[in-house]
Image 1 (cartoon, rainbow, N blue to C red):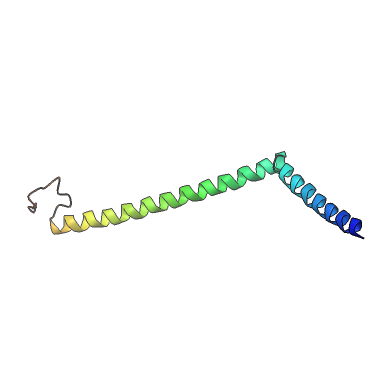
Image 2 (cartoon, helix red, strand yellow):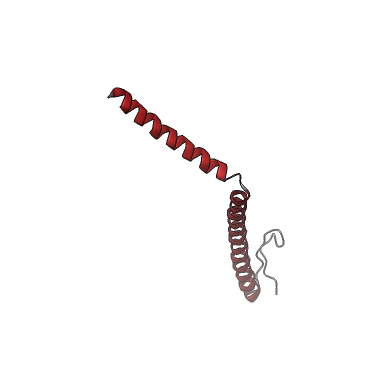
Length: 88
């Protein structure tokens, strides 16, 4: 009876190992490599898209600040106007 139990455990472990090895080997086939490349490219494209959106948002905020300062006749940067004088 004990031998039958250990035989069952061995078969179960063997099946799991074979399944894991088959799954890992699938990633090295042409189809598996193509799927990996597709998912990597999609991830990179999403990251670039997020970066571009953040840059555009920052540009819009800075443009609004510049426009408001121009309308009020003020300068934004201390480097350009250290005394804080207004330009008219």
